[in-house]
Image 1 (cartoon, rainbow, N blue to C red):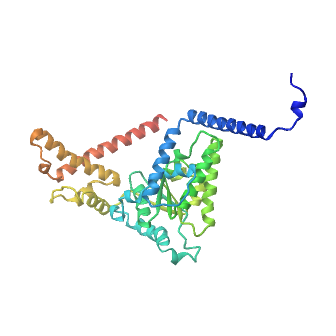
Image 2 (cartoon, one colour):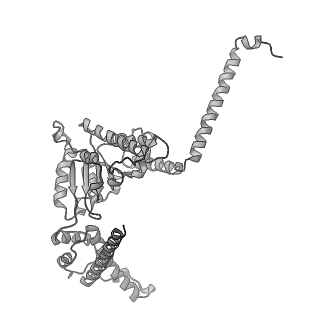
Image 3 (cartoon, one colour):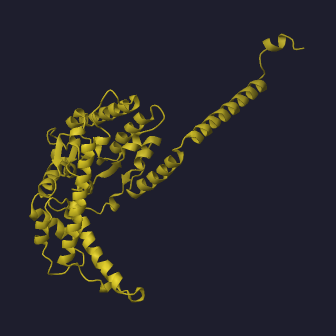
Length: 362
């Protein structure tokens, strides 16, 4: 039987040390057990680990040292594009000379010649740039070329990165986008198909999604208060009418990236696409350009690829496997381009008819 005096007497020094030790062990075991359980039920844990490894590798490649990143910033850093891997410059873009000139003046010059603009609030680079127009016209290419020419770190942000099943995590990831961009400035946060991420808000939006969007816009506004900050949010969309009006207000600099409107533009694009290809010297690209009205830059590239494949297919079908010699593949001729044009037109017509069918059914 334990006497009452045993409970009232003060603990000895050894007993206190033992109690603290047991509590410490118990706390550590509890912490790691809970952490293990959370990791075990998190289906994205493996992806997060891989993202962290990728981020660390990219940070070394771009020469960023002595910059401490949080767990959330590391997740976003996995979407950094190494400038050495962006092999795109203005010379790789044809038919958009006016857009390129405006981008050089409004975005690139204030970043590269910062000392000339730092005393003027009006001449600071815009904090939001919108590239809009039909699909396949080079919006993403222009964004990468802008970052390359301006010497900016390029964060190719995927909206799915900001969605997390744990409450409050999406807001932390949204905050990490901007804190990382500021640490790595000058930088461009690029959001392709931005309308799918920041479309018009409605009462049917999920609470977590609405909070994340509000957080994103609030942090975006913070860029305007720091005039020395060289972070630009650049978005691309083919549905600008679906963007939230609050987003449009934050993207005052807008460029319409349209399909090549004249045969001269298409001819310039064709020359660029076929510049280093095996093309017959008698090919008339002006004639090809006149036959491809309504083709986007992406359409023209696919059409040229089909024409080149015709030569390869003809060579493969006409020779035995043992006698194949890559130097014997004939150059692309006018007739190949004509056949590829007809194929592309049929494909575009079929796609258009499919759209009309869906509209009628709806």
